[in-house]
Amino acid sequence: MLGNHTFVKCLSQKSPVSMKAIFPVEQILQHPQINRAIIISQSGFRKAYQQSAKLKAIQLWNINDLIDLERKCEH
Image (cartoon, rainbow, N blue to C red):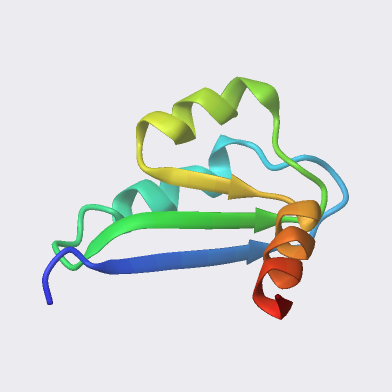
């Protein structure tokens, strides 16, 4: 199926994620089978890059997003 796959990247670092982590994901989104990406970070993301990621079909998740997803799956 073309265009119906999600790429997920998980990061574990002490400081908020910067554009360096987002740029390689932008390259992956150029693959015809991948239509969206999720970057998960326990330390969050720098605000300057949140809007940029949104425009590029990249979702930025933090630990609370994962907890919320787990709770939804339990119900």
